[in-house]
Length: 158
Image 1 (cartoon, rainbow, N blue to C red):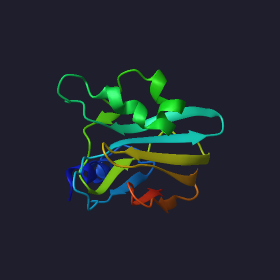
Image 2 (image 1 turned 90 degrees about the vertical axis):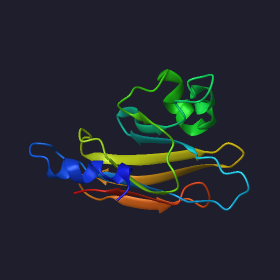
Image 3 (image 1 turned 90 degrees about the horizontal axis):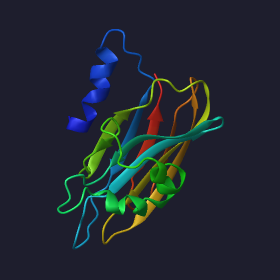
Image 4 (image 1 turned 60 degrees about the vertical axis):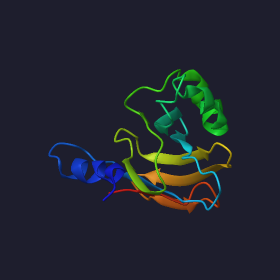
């Protein structure tokens, strides 16, 4: 099991912890000469709520700067939430992820209703992609897939 997949099962088994569901994201290994791990922004939009950043994966240990210089390359996220967030807080930020399957928890405090999960990836000397997954909290999950920088994306509800 990959380290990023460890959190969801632990939360599901912990007494008193409400699990709203999970978000799974596949980052494909692209066959290119110069591969860099993508910066990834994951956020939720819905009627009546401000766009909410769930996770932001970027190079926080970049030499010479905090790595935030290129967060604006995640253009969709930057427009709706990123420019107002400053340096992403420790609770939602993390290092870039290697290609593979990654699972993170869906925020437990989302009220019943219709939402859209957005996953955006941008890679140095590479492409950029934004995938949207509509889902209804407390009813149905959803799934979609990218065509390049992002593979399958799914919202799974308990």
